Image 1 (cartoon, rainbow, N blue to C red):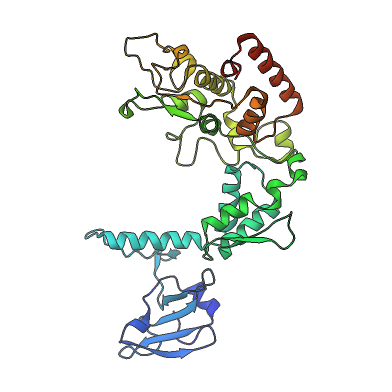
Image 2: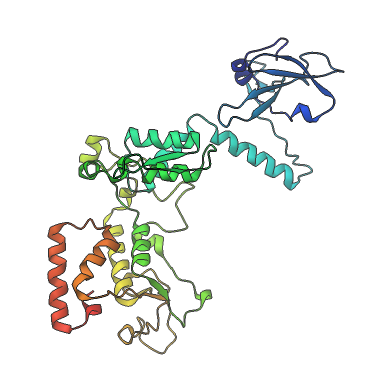
Length: 376
């Protein structure tokens, strides 16, 4: 490709086939160099041959990048069209695990080092953390953390107090996640009041949220071979497995009709907010709270009967006989049950109106039955 000393930009633009470190091979010696390019050649091949190796600094991670002085093109239609042939070092006729690992690692590095990787990755991850329409500043902060591998958090309540996250390497997940959940966009009251902030939660995540918050406990008589969940996707629209394609249960750029469409706002999980999906989710949550994790009344648990009790089990006796698991949450006392539930299920964002309605119903139920568990 080159018969003279190129610039670093020319090396990056023209050479796409990697090479080994020539300093570790006794057949190579330094032939020429500039401030940002070093040229290594074989003494038996002469200067700037196909075997020549160029060394430049990788702008993404600061490490040395070695590239061969060759180009591999594929021509079609009698040379009317041509395109670069991607190199492959995996021998299909004689495969080995080491070559497969090395080629996959090289591919992943090329994806990570792509210019669009930081904003694309950050925007996709932010959508999974509660913001379907992240602000440009939020994406920028996350992208900078992706590139640098570090994120510096400044405590808004203590001047000068900082905390660093990340390993310092490009695409450090610790730095990326810190940049997603710790910038001002994540906790500022003004952002919470913005009607374009936030997002619709995936229905399966809603179910998992309830399970975690309300302490889902596996029944002692449940066998692991029996399984736990059944028919989740068909009932609520999403699950841990079985998406309709290789991407997800819904497109990342789905825009509902109406106000969302007029404002250009996306709501990916909003595509599942159909009548069947909402009805299925309501049934699944009701069954989970009332009968435990079972298939009763539209539940997403396994259908399981050992011919000893009714299909839905004797939930009243506290044994949940025909359920794989149950919610074992028990409030500490009646006075703070609504506060606990608001914190566990809504991150303490329950509106005053809804809080008043729930407190009234809990009080009435508690007064009538004398059981705080029944009131819950």
